[in-house]
Image (cartoon, rainbow over all chains, first blue to last red; front, side, top):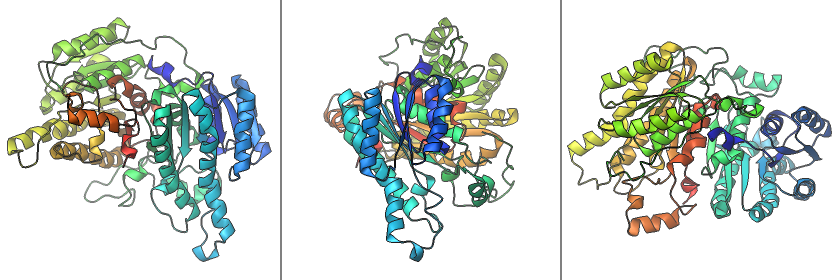
Length: 273
Length: 280
């Protein structure tokens, strides 16, 4: 039955950036679909909160404080997942630093800031894939889901490390997908549009009013897409990037809310989706 | 594709969601209570879509691309009905606007609503550009583009009146790339691809989402990928999975796109191609 193919019963999913935002939403969603979770993030208190949210689902949640920009820490993360569960079925490469890595003019960005932005947003995904894939190859199957961004497809003012790294994440996805197709490992990429996680971001993105569908993304929007890509339901989907952005990237060559000719496009409706 | 020597007319197996409890994390994937139209349900991909929608809980109206396909539609409807779901058959010609309009009305009157449209309209055409005459041009553009355009208009009109809906167009990876001896077919498919982008924006704030599902080379009667010879041999070795897509393998991506699970996705295409579009 088609709905059964989306279930994650008994699967082990490692989720980076699992202490907040999209990562936390995916972790809780996966547990609600039957998966055990390995949540990685830098901040222990945030990981504990994620674990507390997963507890009522009855699934296990192993929390591993990790700096994903450090390959030794990533290797230790995957080793901890293997030690606890014996396998990694799903690798969700979600960790990233957005808000603190753009906004600065180019001449003010130090070498250290450049490397840190690239390491956390891009190298982390390479490190995690490199550590998880041998276990997936051994198991004869696996799912890798990389989280990119609309900035991986379009530029942003004063947006260097984030946009460059996220663009490269799309390419990492494609090369992993082609290489490991014969090992039954599917690698795909989620491309979120505007998902403000706090008041400052909501203000920066003007409440999302320029998003065609009329609202910004909610973390809960991404959960079902991640479930699809982590489940058997997506077994023939590989190397694909799936844009989840309320229509933004389908357009962009005229401002939202205006159109040539008449009548003007309809105004936003509340919470329409 | 709508060709009479279609090999796979075996009875479709349908298992409906019934009263089985869904895990909390999958609730947005259910189509319980929703009404759907599949146009081009005589084709293998249309049939796979109809079966998927019914399994996920939707009531389905099976509409044809071409007349003379009633037996095939009835066979799919019977399988869906046997599993306890609702299926209605409408033999129509998708190139006739009045037929599409009547189909939209029929969904509302027979199924009690109109929430989902899946267009599986397709007529592959392989010929060199210099050998393609104007009558072939008109036919290819009508069967692959104009029918889709009119279906979006006529069914979309009813969706807009009713406050919203979801549309998924089943297409091919040829909507994204060129293939020699298929220029006109690629152009027609590409036209639908960009129509979906623009229409998604036009209807974004009126409650209608619209996306595409792009199939890789598919196991279906009439496909050049199934004709023994140099093309098929080399193609199979070139595919990342070393095999053709089976129509029923679109089920997961289709259900994702038509369900509330994809509520923030519009103007997008999901390729179900095993990674083919990543290849150089």
